[in-house]
Amino acid sequence: KLPVDVKDKAILHAGPIIRPLGDDKFEMVSVGPTTSMRMEKFEKEFVEQTGVRVIVGKGGMGPNTEYACKNFGAIHCVFPAGNAVVAATEVQEIVDANWRELGMPETLWSCHVKMFGPLIVSIDSYGRNFFEEQKVIYNQRKEEVYNEIIPHVKFIK
Image 1: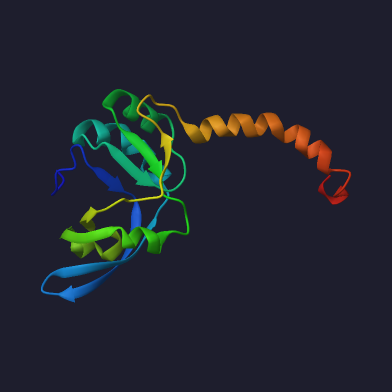
Image 2 (image 1 turned 60 degrees about the horizontal axis):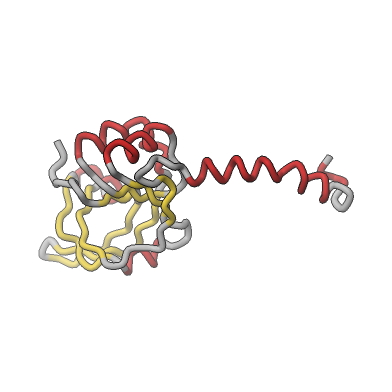
């Protein structure tokens, strides 16, 4: 059982850098999103059992997350890489820290945030996977573009 209720809330797959301020208070210095795909095998059950509505991370997700989003009314979003300090500025307050014995990156940090973003919705509440849809389009265009550039960069082939 989680030590916090995430029903109708958001979670962020991230590796934060936290500055202790004393008196059990903390400041978010940097919060870089980490690869969500590591959680893919757990996502269906996690969303179903916790009622979380927004999952934020880095990179795409697969069929378990698509199913969870479609059937339990959630979305998966991507926080663009390289914006860890921007993300940290959106954290208004760290309100709790659970599992501290696991170390800073694995601690469950509960935060209040404001206007958190920029975010890209990678899987919507209908289960549509933006990244997978874009892969299809990319692959359709790839051969044409590839054939166009080969005469200019012969070392490719």
